[in-house]
Image (tube, each protein chain N blue to C red):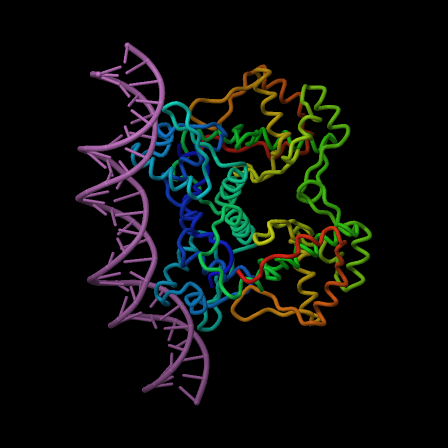
Length: 240
Length: 240
DNA sequence: CGGATGCTTCGGTTACGATCGAAGTATGAA
DNA sequence: TTCATACTTCGATCGTAACCGAAGCATCCG
């Protein structure tokens, strides 16, 4: 017994519902104030404050003071990755929320996962990139091909610039709603920013879901076609 | 708030020290009885029993009755993967055990991670396989090359057989002690079994650490050479 | 059968931590 | 300076869950 790192500590940090809700709220990558997080956790500001100190001491959160506000973010994308992997796991074990809320269908369709696109549309995008040969998938790993580099550069992604950062270009990230992989990494982030910049989609205020404009949706689907054979997984009961 | 799967539930399951210890004990892939797990968790049998029901209800454990014993295992390798990823995360945040025990150096050198080799030797093996071109690494993913298939078949690994299973052949798994990747997947499992079969190494009774015989160690190091440049990370304070 | 072993269930205690009201500190605005 | 906002710290309460002793089943053994 007592071998290796202490998983109980971070399990306990994530194990409290209020804290879990706050962490989930931060998974869209934005920095939130203590007050906003208190609301997200459904608790008072005092309680949230103690929770936030614990999360920071545990290395899950980073904070930066700005005037009289204190902004909290996930400490780095390792945390986002961890949380998403727990979500993926929880989804496979049926640990879903008791009452699927009204926002559930929108979340399943398109949402932000730390900083990239997830949900049905995220999975579809990766599927399409792979089937058109823009990204090659070997085992767990993803790799941008030359053809893919050309294609993405042509729609305004600075692939060369992304390559120069330390962060991996392509990572696959397990999608808890689709239970299949979508594209993470700096390329995943860049693609989503690209959609925002072009006005194809926008964030929603109090949710991780992403809203596409009808024009944006049309363009997105045209840009990332899916062959007929792969369409059969798209239907899903949406009303729940 | 209240979006997505319930990460708090499984966080809470892992967050209790006694449960975390029991889960860690199961990470060597063996099936343990309730009594053994109680000892691993440092609690009485009654308490362990309730913990074990909770873990089973949560989908983390599977049990099978055999006579008057009840054997528990991790429900599947998704659980092992999850636990190891939390360990990796915990290690990067300095959530180490308060008092590194006497078994710590042995654990860092070679231990079992669910069903494959981890620790210094695990990392070394993967490094060597990559540097000799037996495995190619692209991004996050690992892939066995033709040369690697030939090489491993020659030492008695049934690569063709492994390919026919659903489980991925090569997966990379973050090592919490070395903070680098080692080889998981069915190939990782097969390699470790191969070492056991050849008598190069054996499990220890109450720990996840793996003991190499001096002959086995010699053979292992010869089979997986590391070029001089990569050796500089090998030294590590061992006394702690 | 009786006795031993392995485990579960029950009941009651205890301790920890989540929670909030209230007071305290810091920053900014008027 | 004074007031307001944003947040933290203190103090006290309260609920939950971890815990163990004891009793209850189940299985095996002789």
